[in-house]
Image (cartoon, rainbow, N blue to C red; front, top):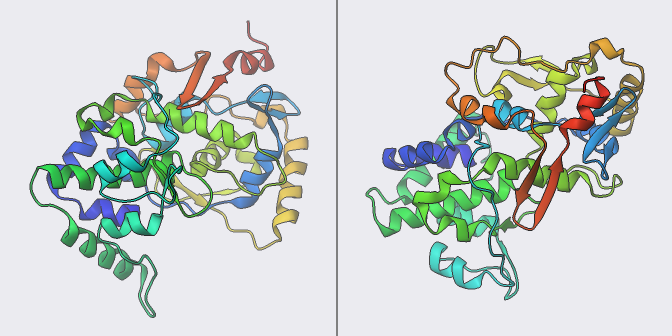
Length: 329
């Protein structure tokens, strides 16, 4: 749905999103979730160290993984600021919508997408995938302001709220979080924030919830593709489009018809027996970075112990644990 709305935006809005650093992320194709893989990884998460604990030691997705897999920036200002007990006033003023309750930071997804022209995201009977996306794109294009101004700014804030609230900092369930809205008031500064680092902080926080809960909130494809690159012995990936960037577009899920619990058990068995030499610690060696400006911008932050911010959530990224696992000083 978000891809269809993005395709319906006027050219000047596309240029604004590119300038903010969201272009590569918004061009990503949908990745079917590998629920068993994500659940197995979640059950290996060590909430005290904020890292996965495997028989050979600790491993953790890094800012380099975020940049290369999603195309989001990790350099700039932390995603933080004032949070409110009620977002009713900024939602009404900046989006022209209403929150679910007086003390809520959530907006109904259906209301938000309807404000962008997509009243219903349901596929009609006999409608193919291409026809389905084309219909939503046409509906979105018809609802968008065609010239710059206040109406266009409101459209862009609505779209960014949907992208950030449902993808980058996604929550379980239907409503869309709008804690990001104060950072969207000045659209000229949106590109200064490190949305990639916020994505990782939010994901780490979600992994720390009870392993009895299936799935994670946040951008799960990052975990999925991270495992494809670092743990290829799991055999969960199938090549889709070679040579494209960001890297998420290169792979798709190898479907498995066995029960979820059986798949999770088999993944754990493989993780317990995989030879250390089959773990890929540096999977991006040899990648051509010439056409990936987002990688070059983020390079100074690769390999550093750093605090990751996502509003009230602040978590550590422990590279030293991984270095110790590798026997490095």
